[in-house]
Amino acid sequence: MEDRVTIEMDGHVAIVRLSRPDKMNALDIKMFDAIIEAGEKVNADESVRAVVLTGEGKSFCAGLDISMFSLDGNSEMTATPLIDRTHGIANRWQKAVWVWREMQVPVVAAVHGIVFGGGLQIMSAADIKFAQAETKFSIMEMKWGIIPDMGGPQIWRHNIREDIYRELTYTNRIFSGEQAVEYGFATHISEEPFKDALALAQEIASKNPDAVVKAKKLFNSVPHLSEEDGLLMESKEQDMVIGKSNQLESVFSSMQKRPGNYKNYRDKA
Image (cartoon, rainbow, N blue to C red; front, side, top):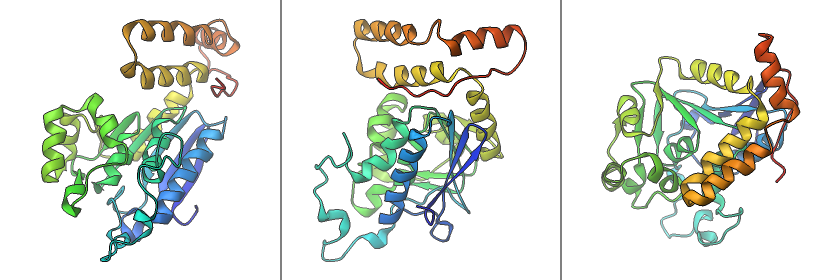
């Protein structure tokens, strides 16, 4: 993993960097596997309360490494049918995105430079995204004659206007960081995305980890639930937070105007 993705701890925040800067962090087989491995490692670490996802070098991620394609149509990419669910509900390529979507703690993306194709889909899995105004984005897959199939469409349908992501997919038009915020792909424009993402992640990590994990679980689930099931889920998850030691610590630390001293938490359900 270390020659493609690195993990650094800053308190309770895991900083995950795509680390193939000579190729603008383009996605080859080793990069896909390293991203999955890093995500699973971070998710299993109960001391992690928030994640910053970023890229080393001039860009966050330039998308698929086109050297993975073969003129005869035979490559490792096509060796296994894409419909095979090799990683839970996902295939290998989708898992590189979905591992961040299903991460129990919030993921804050800090992107810059080029964010194309698979890179945009990976970024989209983050809860919150910071980007520079001059960052270049594209749903680039159509340029290579393929469709976005790494899980991006499952996320975009919740926060991007349908006509917008249809146009961007059909044309692979490049758009700016400011347009990314306007369209809903990014959350904030920042001159220093990593600095701002880390500050936000540290703030999140200072909250009751039980409540943060349960809130993300709720937000990931409610778009797919009926109103009845959604209301019931709110109650079930709150029952597992309220009155517990970390929730009481939130109350007492706030009253005493001091940082909370929380126990690590992961949802075992």
